[in-house]
Length: 226
Image (cartoon, rainbow, N blue to C red):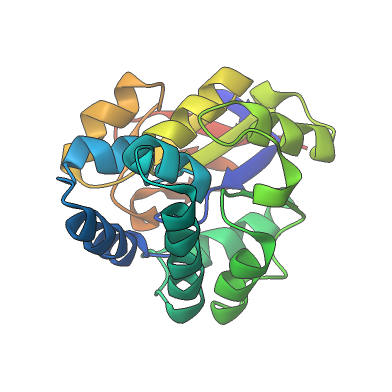
C-alpha cells in the first residue's frame, strides 16, 4: 500500500484521447520524407515528447528550414484537433476533488494548448498546479518536469502518483522518485511496466475507488493521506 498526497496526470493519451490523431499527423510527415514510422519510433520519439525532441529523433538529417516548416504544421495541427476524453477520466478527476487531493497536470504540450483541451472537457478548474513545455528546459524522459511539479506542490516526490501513457513519461516519473500507473492497451503493458509503472490500465474505468483507496486491476493499492 502506497501513501499518496497528490495525483498527477499527463495530457495526451491520459486525459484526452488524442494519440490516434497525433500518430496520423506524424505519419503524414514521415511519409513525405520517405521515413518508415515504426511502432518503436512512435513510442520513443512521439508520445510524451516535445516537438523539438521528435524533430531531432526522427528528422535530424533535415534542414533547419524544413524543421521550421514541420514545427508550424504541428502547431496548426494542435490548434485544429478537439479530442474526446479518455474513458472515465473526468469522473475520476472530479472524485479526487472530493478527496481533497491536490491534482496536477504535467505535459510536454504548451500551456495554451493544454488549457484549451481541459477547458473543452470542463475540468480546467479541477487542477491545482500545471507544468507545461515552457516551464522546463528538459522534457520527458528527464525527471525535470515531475520534479518541477513536486517543487510547486511542496511535496516529496515519493508521495505523488502519476498517470502516464508514454515510456518517456513513465521514465520521467520513475527518475523523479514517483509512483506511476500506465495507460494503454495490452501491447503497451509490458513496455510501461518494464520502465517502472506499477500497473497498466486501459482507461480510468478500471480504477476502483473505495473511501480513500485506489486499487488497480492487478491489486496494487494506493491510499490518499492528508
